[in-house]
Image (tube, rainbow, N blue to C red; front, side, top):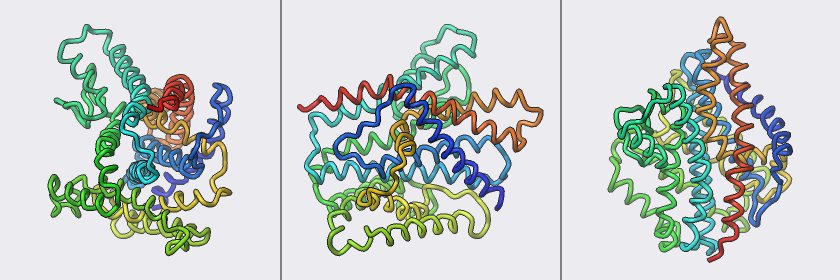
Length: 388
């Protein structure tokens, strides 16, 4: 148990150091601390935390310090659930506020998600091509590479994960984080229908219909379906609808004391679920962790109304570059762990473990700040000018 908990301690310590380091890099590359209308410091902070949890999973997974790897797996699972809840919250909020515009919504999403994704995927494809000795690509390799730009929708042949091997094996270890973006895009594609329905009860009926129509409800508790991801989006939407009653019957949930208790309750419940009983990795598709994580997510929602919370600028900057960090870190980790293993006589030693995770983080954050400044930010500024 102690070794498992050490993973959390290490990642938490790295997160603090990483935020401080990132604040320096952001100043160097000229990332401004401007805030758009509707900016929420608590939700921006949540983005950074969620991305770093996923990083924690994909960095510690290379080391067998805790053989069961329960902590390593859970960090990634929790991070993904928080991201999906956040998506549901933000975009259901857009609909409820009457700000959804089908004429501009998709072009804004394309500008937000596509440019940096193309840069990251192209970079790791290029590195694979270089490592393979600059071969002339075959037609099948060109098609396989092209499919990797499809946000996880592309057909996968003779490969592991949700991406195609092109010039070498195990491409999923470099770019497989895009599997979650497929779910994000499926949610976006439903936005016009959600806007038409316009109420949470109707959206709930739609979610239940999708689960019953396209998934096996009898295998949900065995983790045999993807229903939990639909539930995550729905819980995010629910949290936004709950805000409508924050000055009425639900005001107590948004209070400083109760929301803090919910955070503590969520953390404790998640810990009991992960480490109570036999020590084993939990399947994220079993809808138990999502219920223990929701109170944690709700704390960040409630914190929107407590502006003195989560005001640390470096933490918010981690949220600003979180999408770039999410895309870069997996491939960075792959190359760092292999490079540093050549420098240590015992690649699985504790010192190699800590040093490797630290180097992974520093390189990943540096690339993320640079790519945000020169790839993401220019397209985000263009999106703010689209009004029709």
